[in-house]
Amino acid sequence: MIPPKGAATADLHPERRRPERTWTRREYKGRKKPLNRLLIVTIATVVLFVGGGILAPSTVSLSALQLMLPFFAVLGVASIGQHLVIQQRGLDLSVAGIMSFSAVIVSALPSSQAGIGETLTFVALALAMGFGVGAINGVLVALLRVNSLVTTIGMNSLMLGITMHVTRGFSQQAPPPLNAFGVGKFLGIPLTLYILLVIAAIAIFVLAKTTIGRRFIATSVNPDAALTVGIPLDFYRVATYALAGFCYAAAGVLLAGYVLSPTVFSGMPYLLATVAAVVVGGNPIGGGLRGSVTATIIGALFLTYLGQLVLAVGFETSAQNIVQAIIIIASVGLVEAGRRIKFEWIKFKFWVTSPDVEFRIRTIYTRTLTRLGLSRLLDVSPETRTRWRTFYLRMKKRLEITE
Image (cartoon, rainbow, N blue to C red):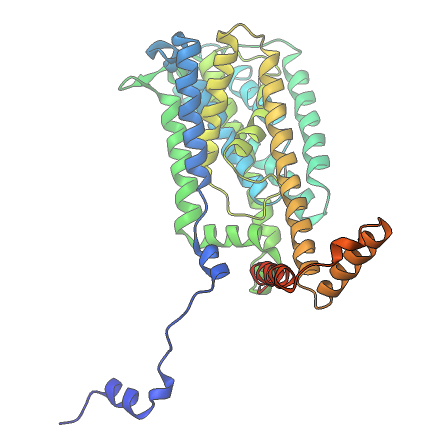
């Protein structure tokens, strides 16, 4: 009987068998997964709703939540665009201008009695405008290497100026079909929330399940490696800004449909809020790590309810901007402080594990006690000296850098 091929190979070459893997303490600790940022922001949002229900019970009533959901949908759609840009190590501050001009296109340009066909035409025009302006931002950032902050701030001012020129400073009412959609509900849920869910589902699916999404993640997490394997970085960056502009324009259309008469600067409150939503979701502003669109959307819900709660407890509207600014500054500060602490900790480990550190520690200790007139403390028993050395060797082994 002929033995199976695999068995014969194993018997003839026993030395090729793979030995069992023994994990070191450091490797075992590295395998432990940290708390997911999605779980953290979800817990924080639940705690906020519970605390808000205690402080102001009216904010968690059914009517209050239904009034809040459309604004949450607007912020969520705009935050998805900001999330994409931040994932690509950028920052888009043209949110306000694109949203404001998009709202003007669908409210000031159509006739007051526009039908469904005319309304859809101007909605498509607004979305195309957002996509085109975002693409221009991407070309300036990716191809001409202009700083993203400078580019998007300039574009934001340009779009606000065009908005003022078109409207002459006066707001107009959105056409009836758009307003009916903005305030409409299906199964008791605002239609604007369905738009958010559709856009979010598409973004999550593309990023997680498609080759384009995996390449997008690669260009943001490790651009050098992505460039090495032939991924066109500039194309993905231009596409990122274009899709972000599309999201801002869609948010502006939803906002115009819900509020009926959007102001000339209706997008200004979302300039800071979109960045804060990404930050609250646990996504680093500097990019470089894989972000979570779902966490960003929950961050938008957190901020929307927080704004409603701030007004309900008696603060002014300006308090919302203050809270959002504190969130952004605190998050950036914590990240930078964490990086600094990690750097100093690595320096300390290198110092402790250097070959001559034991001699230097002993020399410094001896000289210091001698100068202070405490040389009698140097006369310790051999047992104490052995315990000190054992403690030092254990600490050195624990801190030994094996990466």
